[in-house]
Image (cartoon, rainbow, N blue to C red; front, top):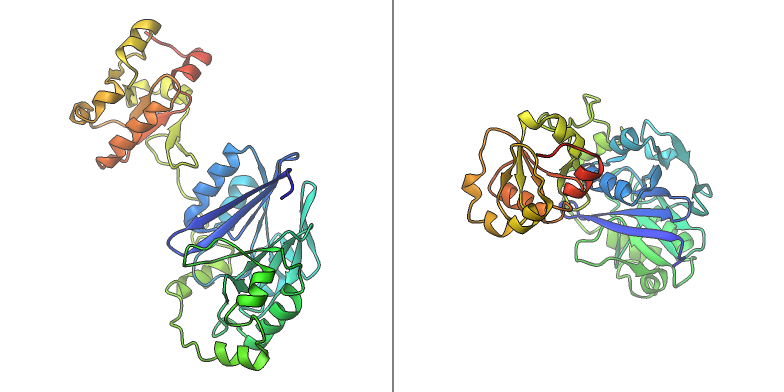
Length: 355
């Protein structure tokens, strides 16, 4: 893999969907392939933490098993939404066709039109041909089904055999789904071992296989397809609302965090829980006015001492150990809990008041 390429494979357990983040480390430009609505906070947080600029959400097709997060991410990052002209997705910022390229920094993803699972399916090939993102067209030891959404086993056969299997054998295959814990394959492996279309399978073999699978329709079909035809745009056109109790952000690790300056300006409306050791407090001789002090190693046995009625803001020296306090409080069923980003180091650095 090119040293300047940042690559992340992300997974949604509920739908078995892989989302891919690719970025040019030099320019910071990034693209996201096949996002998931319920994971848009995860993806946005990762992009922010890595200090990337998302320039495009790329869709391999109009999915039937999950709702895309493209519209939400566009409104949070100002990225473009790109998909095939034949996908039926609207609105799109960029209609892509076979042979088009989606550039990010010094890299590009070339569009390969691979219809069959749906008419609008495309695969994205990295410009050095080291990896290809095949959506639901080619899976690991499988392929996308062809019994709904303009599916055609004949078209899928030709898309895989003539286009994808023409790629270098060592080209890594990254699909949109896997349900058995597998993460990738190669073109060479699938050419030899794919039980549906590999080896000596011809078009008759493949079509006969696909037409006799008799699978139930995806559980999310009636929800996912209409939503994805709108790029995941909610019916009310509204973005998810920030919690009213605090302007929190969610880290990639799932922790709710709040800026220390907001806490300092709203001390009367929150409860600050300081989990530093007593030795730290004695050494620094500084506390936040009104803060409760329970060392992190004692908190588990003293959770009932943390008052209810106000949002709880956890803090320690650096904002690391206080994440443990955040987790402990959340495990007790408290929703209005956040960690103060950067802890006392940031609090002092911003010149915020102490007593």
